[in-house]
Image (cartoon, rainbow, N blue to C red; front, side, top):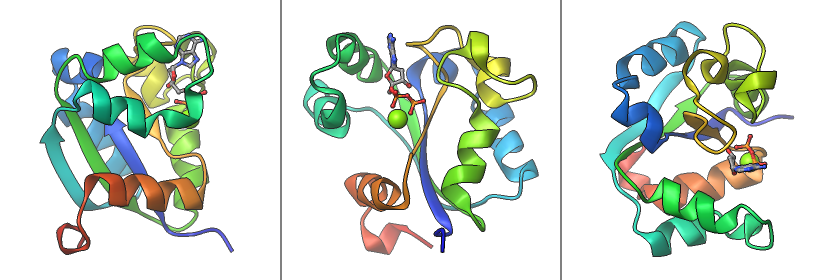
Amino acid sequence: MAGNKTFTMIKPDAVKAGHIGAILAKINEAGFRIVAMKLTKLSTEKAGEFYEVHKERPFYGELVDFMSSGPIVAAVLEKDNAVEDFRTLIGATNPAEAAPGTIRALFAKSIGENAVHGADSDENAAREASFHFAATEMF
Ligand code: DAT
Ligand code: MG
């Protein structure tokens, strides 16, 4: 059975553009409960570690630089079928291909600066949540 938690980040482009409130409203309207949240900034080391699975991909350096370029909002969200439903809510990686009304269609600038992260499996959601939050910070 699919788990009920996912992990997200509002990325530096969307924070810089002032979209935190609008994106959180979308998340709440879609039925997700926020169980942990913080405004923070990743060091290049931390960003590199977070995106380690993409280490061999050609865009890795660019991704790490971008994700450590400014503040982000990290959050853990709860809902039935959280991982899959959140991926649907954010839309395709490339905003040009994201379905109308999705967070990336509305707020993303490009495939690299695409407004939000969403975990892609229950296992990664748990890993990513504990990467950013202590157990005592999740409610
Ligand atoms: P997603 O964030 O939809 O899970 P992913 O895991 O394949 O996508 O890639 C992680 C991030 O890396 C993605 O959100 C933006 C960046 N990225 C992916 N493909 C890219 C590309 N072709 N050029 C530049 N950045 C890319
Ligand atoms: Mg991914």
